[in-house]
Structures are given as C-alpha cells and as structure tokens.
Image 1 (tube, rainbow, N blue to C red):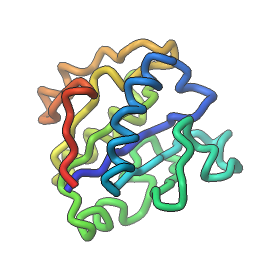
Image 2 (tube, one colour):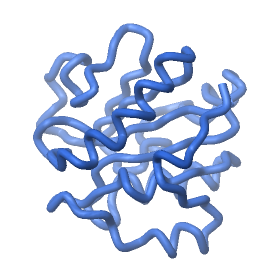
Image 3 (tube, rainbow, N blue to C red):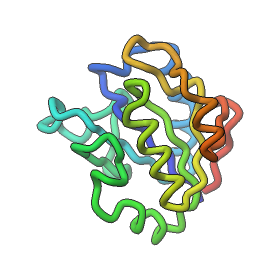
Length: 156
C-alpha cells in the first residue's frame, strides 16, 4: 500500500499556485479512495498552528499530521517507519517544499533506508522560490523513483 507524504505544504512557503494545483489532484485521489495521507511540518514557527492549518490542503481528522524538529521526518517522529510498516505501507509517495536539499530530500532518503520504495513527485517538489528542485537525478541514483504527479497511480 502507498502513503502520500506531504512536507511543509503550509501557506507560508508552499506558495507556487502551479505546484498547489498539480499536487491537489493526487491529494483528492488519495482522499477519494481512503488512502494514507500524511501531512508533515518541519517548521518551528508553525508548531502552534492547528492541525487543519498545517497545509494548504486542509488536513482532516482522517489524515495523519506530524510535526518534526528534524528535516528527516523519519528521524524526527519516533516510530514513524514502524507504524507505517504496521499499516502495510510499503511505498512512500513524497512531495512538498524543500530547501534544496532539505526536508523532502532527507525524508525521501530516509524512506529508502527504512526499506520503503520511494516515489518523488518531480513537479510537486519545489524550493523556497517556487521552482522545481535540482536534485531529482541524485534521488534516482540513490534508488528513488522520480515521476510526474499526473503519471503516478497510488496503490491503496
């Protein structure tokens, strides 16, 4: 089963309207099939925000909301990998705001180390300026799959 992991997709940094719309389609598909949707924040300044405000996609009570003081979500959230494995998640589809490289990169690489297959959504990982990050080839070399959001089908 897949989990869609969105990192730092709050309104303070994830401001590219194109990326918001592109990623919105797969968020909608994940919700429509009752899939595992994880919203993660690595930003200290958002620690006091309500869960529903942690992303421009408005997490609801069915979604998993995580907060980490470490860019690597798997390092910052105790037992995340074990919990996902217990839920039969074997593939992580990841997107969000990355400070080139930052939390998306670190979490994607950690996902590989934690024995997940990892898909990085190439058109839905942006830097602080709203442009795609430059490390996609390095992610493929490390073992991640890199796909466009529209070409990604989730296994639920």
